[in-house]
Length: 70
Image (tube, rainbow, N blue to C red; front, side):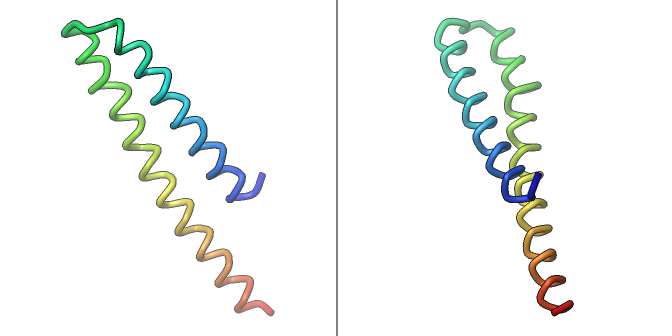
C-alpha cells in the first residue's frame, strides 16, 4: 500500500467514524456519552490528524529522496 493510499483510507475512515458517532450522539445524550466522546472519539480523531500530518511529511521526504537519487 502506498503512502497516498494509506492517507486516503485513513481520511475516509475518520470521516466515517465522525459521521457514525454523530448519529449515535444524537440519541445518546448523557454524561457517559460526553465522557466517552472526549476519552475515545476526540482522542482518536486527534491522533488520526497527527498521523495524517506525519504521513504527509513522510510523503514529501520520499519525494525528495527520489529526486536526490535520480
